[in-house]
Length: 258
Ligand code: G3H
Image (cartoon, rainbow, N blue to C red):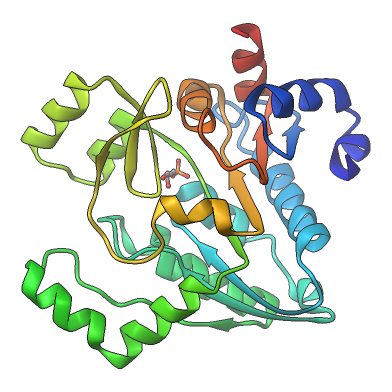
């Protein structure tokens, strides 16, 4: 309500939130695919949402990676730490992204911008099951995983399935599986069909999507007309406490079809 009123787009936001059965939706003007300035409003809305939702005192905020999250992180400042102690952690281990858009980097960036703390999760991409078992017992890995378990807020984005499959460098067998199962969305290292069902999961340590329902503040930032189908699919089963921050490009496209 707060943001919706400020941005003067209450009705569409209410309709979208009701359709997805989520707590709140914020629609910023424009279409990110065509206007890069939209990211500024998305960032501001994300910042304001956090400022509105996060309680005073200690907060553990788990973040995922991606270009949206990297851009959003640029707008954060120390004011968010007023009356709060902020601890940022990457929600999951590496997902084959380039360094600057990995969850580890975003988490570090947010901690630096807000004067908060950061706990990295250093786990290599390609390790066998046995090595993984050992890694999980490593004190630094364990420390991060314990923090992730206690997170009271999580922020992440949603991507188009085929775009994300390419970017994450998945092999041909998996690409075929995604096609056979009509994957349209990707989030959290998981691929979803149009019904919002998981059809493939990249096995990585850290927060699992099944845990999302127990986290008090879930914030999703995903925008641009090209992401409309992916957002619509993923949001079908999104946790009810979710705040979705999007733009007119995606929202109008979704609202057209409902
Ligand atoms: O899981 C979804 C992706 O992280 C979204 O990535 O923000 O670069 O589109 P993006």
